[in-house]
Length: 89
Image (cartoon, rainbow, N blue to C red; front, side, top):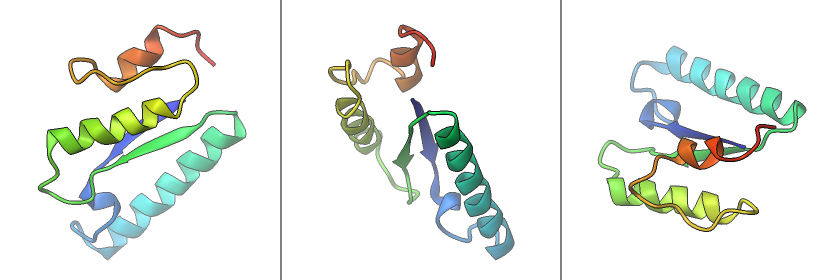
């Protein structure tokens, strides 16, 4: 399992259209490569500048709820720490 936080530049041409196309291409390549080796990629979509910490935590909690063997996300934990306790894939 992999969780990725994608900020607005993954969705809007903040740094220009060329950079946006490059980010989309790289995101697709990364997702495809992870899928090939059996990983599941979840994305926390922070597609606007004013997204709140609570909204991000809520998205993370929804992701974790959909992963077998995990209960819920505690805001005091970082998502990655939840996976360090499990055997690696």
